Length: 243
Image (cartoon, rainbow, N blue to C red; front, top):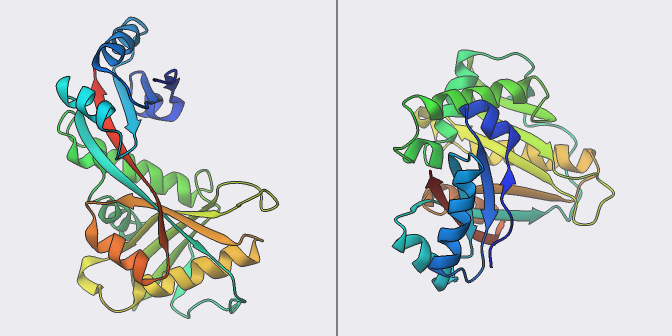
């Protein structure tokens, strides 16, 4: 069964053509072909098609039509079930102005992004997208706060934090949208300190859970979150359907 296509306003505006999202469960090839024909008539150029990793029928239909498996999206969560020190690690501070260091870290955070790995996107799309993302985050449009780790005069770590729901809502959580440590200074516990700051911020804001989405192909990131006490909550396969 296929759900109705949901148009994505931000993606459509950014990419300059109509983009939508759809979810499928046990989708036969004929059903998928029919919906894609309707999508073409409606003017869609790109669809993000999500299926569960154990849905063999939907995967077979997607493969038969030559759809690109662009991402194996992994969602990790962590409950904050103890009192957190209200003081930041000393090298971490909020940032409210964009800089070349901050943009460079945002680009590093997307090394495994489907927007970088799908060759059908125009050259430079990934770079423009992550630059726009961090600019809007620093401006407070896509994140409540952006924190950076400074070493000497350089910004070498970054994390952006966005509450997904009101703090009073059931299962309320704060999303880690971007997290990056400069490749030259990794394995110095900078990522761990950024997570300490994220837990502190979430608790001060009244939230009891952190949420982060990465890619299963980014094995280093998955190991890092598991080491830090996160658990894998969901895996989703995302296909790109170009019209």
